[in-house]
Image (tube, rainbow, N blue to C red; front, side, top):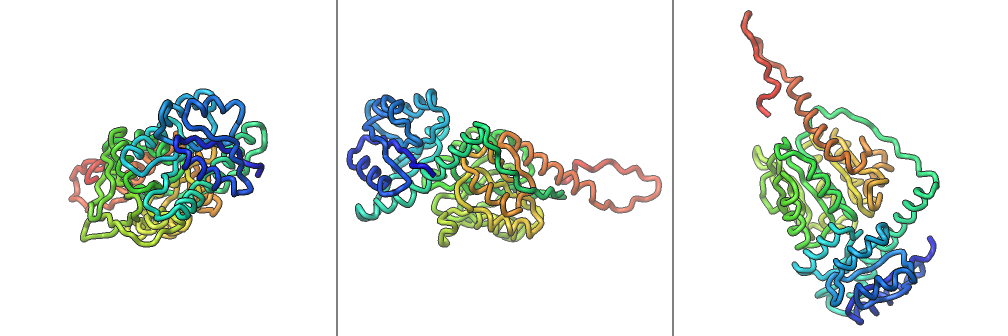
Length: 379
């Protein structure tokens, strides 16, 4: 990969120097400039031509959200990572920025104990995002410029006689993708939906509240012991795993602090494993845009249990890491553009319900008795 040019925008000179120093230590990254506010950053963009922008959320003169909106007018595809504080105000502003076109975000180090720990935190979280986002953007640009696209992985279509739950996993680009999908689902969806979106604490609660306001279904951050209900979406809380378990005749959420998997907590693999165990061939898993491989091992369990797996296609993904890894492993039953995923999920749920009704064996009736069509009953 050619050197990655980064523009760092933050009103704190200490933060600018720390981030620039960490990034410049990586041989694949070159900090081409810094700016103390959004106005300076926008003025520098034409000359610096960065591959990616690290943008502080809260700044004087021109804050991150205002800067992002202006930047998207002139640079619609330039990756932008918001650099936010882990506070309610910072989380809310970051979610606003994601809705306005930010590509991803990283939270600023807080309460980590030392400058060295802060530096390692920035290095561990920011550098992989920079490389992943710029790599995906360059690949997308090359394909748009005429380079042949990679051959699509093989899919394995399957008929699912019944869908009892939808489980969704996503990361980078997931908030926008989830918002688009849940807005297309009906209020009377016949099954519950469980979601892992890689986010820290506080962010997940605010994100669930925003989803709840933007769609006809009920959306909640999952809490321990909460019963799954049709037409309800449960979002895994930040820094906690979400697993499902049977409790009598009900399925309930269990929140745990078991170790991270794939460096993630919540982890898609953890959720998908429990979904496969509880629902078996009634599980419908959906893997959306995101970096890394979280979801592959869980998808193996879903497939082994007889469930079905849908992944978002590469063209509509911000990063085709997670869905691409599931597809490359031969686990995907469908590879679907984002705009079609809500309809695909709804169709699968409806088809499974109709199939289950159609295959029910009705008790024999006395001769001459007229039996009414019961296809719509009991569901």
